[in-house]
Image (cartoon, rainbow, N blue to C red; front, side, top):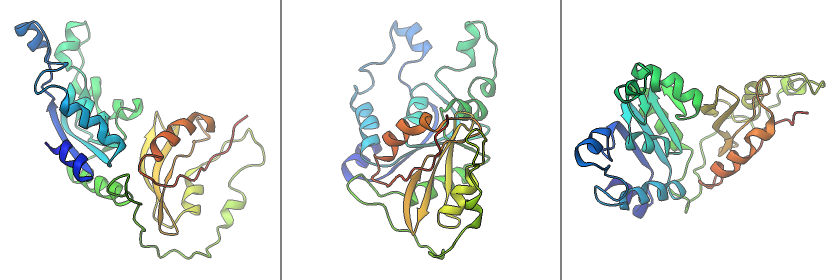
Length: 254
């Protein structure tokens, strides 16, 4: 299986997901009296690799249609997840939810707008081609596994470049908000910042950037909506896995 090969060969894996995972639908419970999980359909071996790869190789999940059940779990359990804007992701689909008293469409239940705001999926794009392009760029910043170092990217930016805008970027008034993204663009290599997640209604941003050609993970708090301490713990947990440096760009709020 692909997950096992990625694990053993220490290779990145891109999960292209559409449909359900077949782990045990409501229909299976009605016909057999029990779901297939845990332990059904080949046991738990494949799910062990699904989770183990998160600490070993870069994992990308692409939701390219309606994704439900175990498919949704595999999409969410990835380092970078992308879905097309006409796709949807949910544990159980509209027919199941309707039995509970709510008549919702797929988009209302788990469309791209819902999932990106809730943090279930990192990024939403218009087409499948854009999803593949985002995956390629995301992986270009990463090594093949945690046993290697990140690649050094080509950099044409002037190392002596000075940005006068930084002198006034942060207000002296600590209670005054400011825009973080122009600061990031000014500090890092020109054109290198790849923002691949605006987390929980844009309270913070997560992206890869180049710093003298070296890829770094950047997780700045967005001062308009979030205090800096709200993003410290997940930044340490994620950025430490693929052996990438993680310079901090933040300002503590009082």
